[in-house]
Image (cartoon, rainbow, N blue to C red; front, side, top):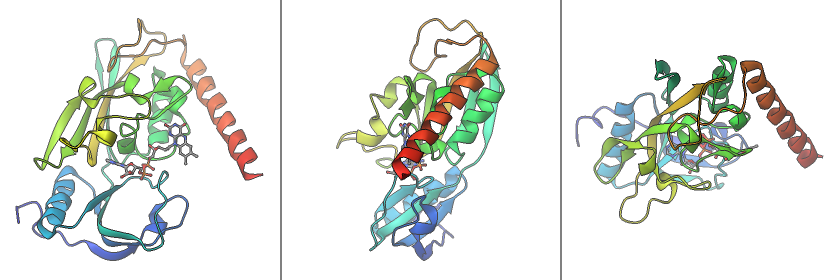
Length: 241
Ligand SMILES: Cc1cc2nc3c(=O)[nH]c(=O)nc-3n(C[C@H](O)[C@H](O)[C@H](O)COP(=O)(O)OP(=O)(O)OC[C@H]3O[C@@H](n4cnc5c(N)ncnc54)[C@H](O)[C@@H]3O)c2cc1C
């Protein structure tokens, strides 16, 4: 066993219903929370050494776990931290995979950074967003993502994927359907994206570069987000009626 997996002791028979928003689902045979990249690597190596499957859990909003539970090791992604850096008239935002997505959107909108506002109200954590290239109202996370760091199970290393390498398409990416030869992205660790300031000079949408900014001021970004959230609440009310 390599250095990462030494000393890692996963919990056993952990109820996954407690970790999924629908509140249903049987237990994980083994379960561990990863708070940093070395814990992700440790989990990977622990599972590989025992030849048990590795499963990644984010916020559990898009999963329905069967009553019989999950065989193997479930890794709950709990990496936290957000960094921001001003660069070339845009803002570079780096968010760890365990950050709640909607809080990141709210924080961006509150500061007047354009690019994520229509993705407000989407449940889950940051790390899951590149998987299916989450999107809403004409905006997709691929419009702003510049780098995704992810575990490559074929090498056991964390690799940085540029926007093009992520092969984003509609609700899909390399990480979701990477093909039999390169099954990557089972444990994304963080993403970095560029967000234009509202009223900035975005010209056209280029992958991984600031999206064109249709709004002139931060309050309008807030309005876009609020309108989206109201529409979402309405849909939920109708669905629940
Ligand atoms: C009410 C509702 C509204 C939604 N609206 C939208 C919408 O408007 N647009 C849209 O695109 N989606 C939408 N979704 C889908 C959902 O929000 C996204 O799929 C979200 O990204 C899931 O995040 P999560 O952290 O909860 O992932 P989970 O449910 O925990 O996991 C989902 C999948 O992603 C994998 N995964 C999770 N985290 C990682 C990671 N860090 N690394 C590797 N794999 C990982 C898991 O293994 C699993 O296969 C909606 C879902 C709900 C329930």
